[in-house]
Image (cartoon, rainbow, N blue to C red; front, side, top):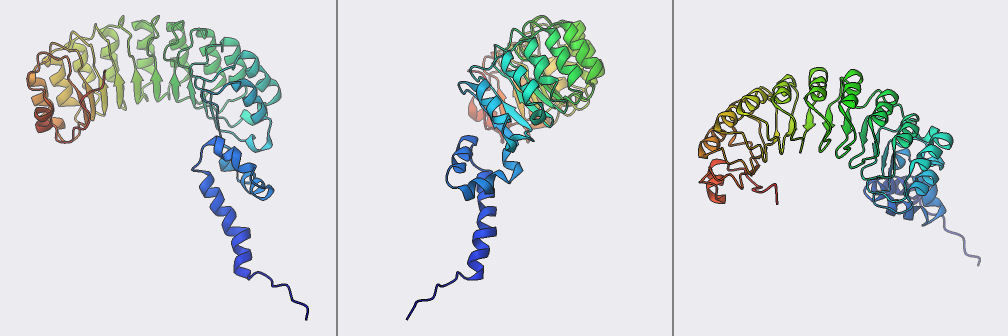
Length: 354
């Protein structure tokens, strides 16, 4: 008697055709880009399933990879990356102006929806490359080019003029940019929310004042290691009602008067005052009384503050502060771990600087 072929139950067929692909899509969102690419090689069925799900292909991450320029061109040439929104090339190797120019000429369609571009540490990129890449991504919102000494005011002008929707701009370590770049930014990006100018040593009070007077939507401002700025700038910070993050590490000209003005920024959550050597209890008490939502605070290396500043801070922020660095504050005598926990019971981190 001839055996009949047994058909799989309907529930099994539904599971294979509908449930498994959906499960794979969910699982794939939790794996790295490299692992996701590996999954494509498992089977033709899995390849079709994953490539048909656009949310999986919104980001390209070539961080610290070799031959990143060639990889980027190859990836953006693939249909699945036609709607990429994020590209990360942080400290990637072998990425140069010529690669960005190829993207401009051959892969511009893939970059039309790009919202975030990270070129941190890509030191072979110059103004020429910046012009090429920004001309193709008008919807860019986040741009970061940390530690690049080849990019000048001209490159920043290209970013500003080509990308009208920038809200987050990181120029940390771009030592060649000047007040001219800040003027262009202030005139064109008044909705800017985050600006990092760490170690941009050519900047002066004049440039910063333009930013502070026009970019009132700033929520994050990093002025780390800009020792030439004065109270002319610091007093203007008070005009930022939405400010939550402020880094003034190394602001050696910041006085108690300037700090008292900053205290008008009621929404500050994170404040770095490390090595602000002119600050005393007078200025800091104003901060404690005005910024009652503080969670992160560093007073590292300030010798002019005493136990009084922490006592006042405890009265206003004892239930919010979770990070507090008072190392090197020789005027604060009661700064052992146990003594600080008595004042700030939610304290979890006691050291910011090593």
